[in-house]
Image 1 (cartoon, one colour):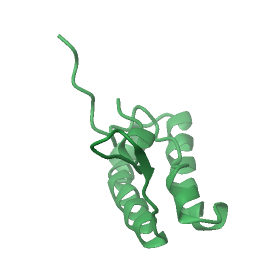
Image 2 (cartoon, rainbow, N blue to C red):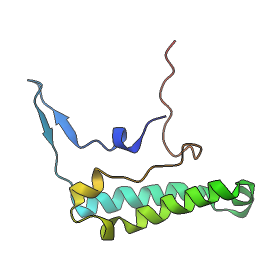
Image 3 (cartoon, helix red, strand yellow):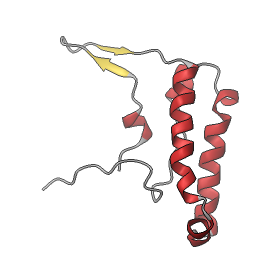
Image 4 (cartoon, rainbow, N blue to C red):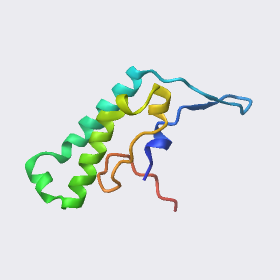
Length: 101
């Protein structure tokens, strides 16, 4: 499973191997955050929600609340981008890594 840190990495390596961190804006954070909220909405129809354990419901609610709280939690967009909340690993919100053969 990929992590948000892997997918949302803001580093850029140029041809000579030097690494540069790309600055992010609050608009970029909002767009990505809103996309994650929309993707996690798939767990909230009654039939899917009712199939979750109390623990999993709490994990999903905490993840979504952390997304909504990002503008108040972090001073800069870069800080927010570097600290995405942990997605519940069971949620299937991140693409699977290819299995090595």
